[in-house]
Length: 320
Ligand code: CUA
Image 1 (cartoon, helix red, strand yellow):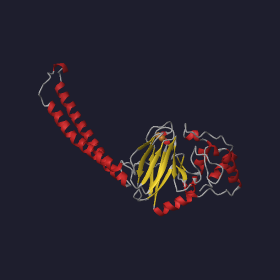
Image 2 (cartoon, rainbow, N blue to C red):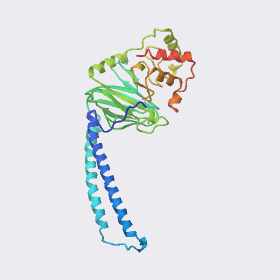
Image 3 (cartoon, protein in one colour):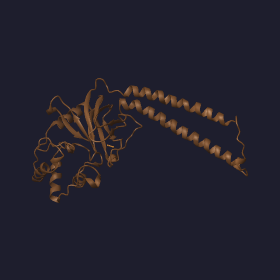
Image 4 (cartoon, rainbow, N blue to C red):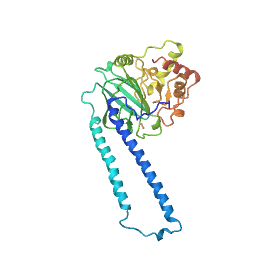
């Protein structure tokens, strides 16, 4: 992975701000309970050892009405209080965040696949609609409705600093929503075991200021320009012949949506669904041998010659 962490103890948006205090409460209660149990257990063991010196356990008479029952009564009464608080608090938090916003500022479609995230921004016309992968841009201060579609098996959408978890189930559309208070990159992860590369099924939510977001959106709507160098031109030819079986680059004949849309591949910081930083070396390694990096992913090893690999990477690097 890339050193980014799933930070579920801080929040950066309205929705997570409802969840995180409850997480802290249950965490602290659990730690305190563990300590109390450990201390009682330690005390109990010491008592038994004192009793047991030279006495067989079957010689100890069972006492009825002793203080043992009081311990149980008090234990139940004391543990019922935090449990009740947790129950009421959870219900209140769920009531606040479970329903999708009635008037979302923006709606996006997210379709998890084995093992990557397809993100579609729908506009009023096809020319205003585009797809990207593994990097979700949102404007700050906006409630974004996320429609989750299941492509193959059950996955789960989770961006701890922005939202709770919602499953994506084949055959139905589940609704989630995210909102970010301030610009930043927020790490997300699939949290439903979905196959061999479940662990390497990450993504990033990038919260931009509304101005930056609109600039990003305008840039994403552009089609890819024709490459200028000879190597990149050969790379494009090879790409349209081989990679186009799965991938799309708008502005070329490659239009398959089986794998990620690569029209603006170089605008993303991570590749392979968060498994690698988007550097030239990683990109070449990934194109050539995805099965070495994510065994079981649906992209086969390409077994390219050195020249083919150079050309394809030279072309991919033009996809800004
Ligand atoms: Cu997708 Cu786990």
